[in-house]
Amino acid sequence: MGLMRPRRTAVALAVGVAASGLVAALPAAAAQGAAPRPSACRPANHLAKITEGPHSAGHHHYRVTLTAPRGYASCTLAGSPVDVRFSHDGKDSGLRAGRYGEQGRKVVLEYGRPVHFDIQVPTDARQVAADEVGFTLRAPSGEIPGTSVADGSLKVARGTVVGPVRAG
Image (tube, rainbow, N blue to C red; front, side, top):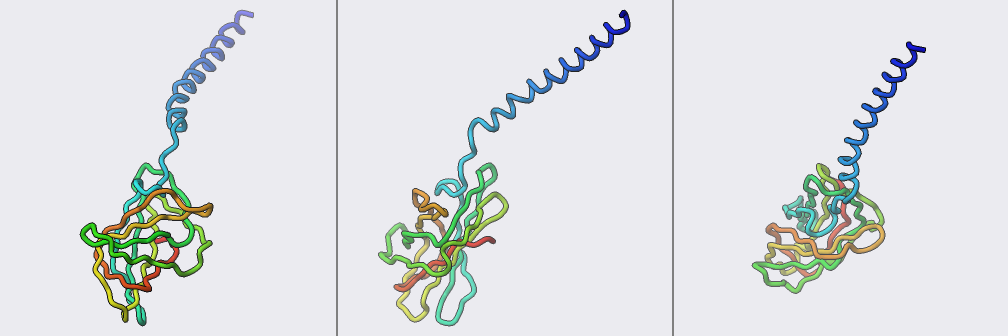
C-alpha cells in the first residue's frame, strides 16, 4: 500500500499541472473568440484603388481592386457593385453606371487575396475626368450598407457599366 500512495500523488500532480496549463490557455482563446473580427466587406474596412486596364474594341477599361488589411474577417461578395457614382475633385459628375455580367457568382475577400471589378467605358461617348468612384458592394444576401470609395484617375461617360466582383 505504501507504493500506491506515491503513484497516486504523481498522477494527481500531473493532472493538476495539465489542468492549470489548460486554464491558463483558456482566457487567451476565449479573448480571441469573444469579439469577432470586423468584416473586410464593410466600407471602412478595405482599401480600394483604381488602375487602368486593357482596352477592348470600343471600350476603355479600369480595374477597381479591393484589398483587405490584416486583422479583418473574410467575407463573401457577389455580383456588380450598385449605386456607382463618379466624382472629380469632390464634385459629383452626375453619371451613374449600369452593370453587366453574371451576378450570382460568389467571391471571397480576405487578407492576402484581393478581388476586383471592371469599369467599362464606351470610347465613342463624351468622356469626363474622374478621380474617385463611390459604390455599394453586394453580398449573396443583398447590399452591404455604406458607400465604399476607390481613388485613381479615370474617364467616364454615359453608358459606363461595371462588371461583377472577381477574384484576383
